[in-house]
Image (cartoon, rainbow, N blue to C red; front, side, top):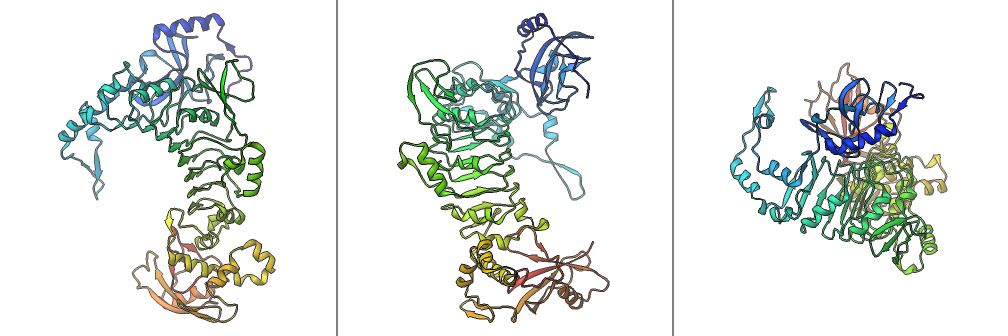
Length: 585
């Protein structure tokens, strides 16, 4: 990296000249642009003017994809500061596009004919890996219908370079029935433009602004009373802006905030003045304007969002569960997506939350049980590794859809626990990691789990068992499993160490997969090593080293039985289980 400790910066007079050039060139600092001929290569104008050693006028651009030449400086002269070491470059004005209006994009997308290049890209691969062109049946009829804008209820305009609304009061006249609008990857940055679009489209309920770099200033945004779903993924939004934004979204039901590098849920006091809504961090007003109403903001909990059912915070940087608890008083919240954050521990603390709430609110009757309507909690791809976090999920009042995949606790290859143990720990889960938990799978999992714990009881005292496995005694009694002998019930015998298990053995290796599956009665004390020897005999496998997997219902991947000294009972394998026989690579 170059040493810029003595770099030269452009002078004030140069900066003034650059400002005057903005009007002449049609590019202004902070403006969003895309490369001519490539509407997916998007960046922000950071400089306009001359560059030492090069003739003519240049535009300095900080590119979103960080694939450029430098950080805003050339030959120890800094012209602007790019966000990355290689995200900046200087471009001739004629090689940049300022974008088009929303109306122009509609014309281009729905009334323009597809080019030969676009049609050439429409193909599938044959069995011989050759391109087979796709012919659209009824293409002309479909194109005709889409071109009648008055009938259009949904418009998808991704990466078309939309930067403005166009002439005022024309959008509604042209697409009066538009309800869904996708503006992914365009050049929208000002909230005033978002407000103008929504005001001109009174029926608009779904708006997608993914991959538009939105401005920090949200002042001037009107009431968006009909917006039900708002997608703001990868827009650079911070939660302080969300706190302001929510004042304009009285009917919002789904809010998507993926990929915004959020680390905290920062809650500030919201003050309403006669002129506008704005945010302060103390009781002093920033502009001294007359106050009509001060909302009782709470430093611990997000308030408002009365209709919000789904909040998507995936792919952010939230590490502390305390931040998530600030969302626990959203009464209508049913789905909370927290995949791909940095969470390492979760808990549910009703009493502590109530105490904090009473300290912060003058009207304790407004308090509701934390996450009282939450049905779906997605926690995949975090750093959760403790069973206490899993057990805490039982305290959520009606939680039944849970994702824990790609966490250490659920990764059996890294010492995590298998699916059947998770099911046994989670009393109310109906969907785990995207797969439904059937009544049969739950019963089998709980029985296997009890058997597994019983084999380990000699290793821990009863109090330790109760702490680590709070549902063990409950499940043991529920399924009528006794300590030493088999228990006969309506569902048949629950086999213990002295019983036999019906096990289906199925070959899946490349050279042995043609062999027919076998069902054998085996003692529950059979070790994995002994079973491997038996498989070699059952299937007549000469000179083939085997490895065994347990196929579990609802689990996307089978469980490797990697401890040759462990018994079937140690792995919690129950009656009518299926074990896959593979060959070592």
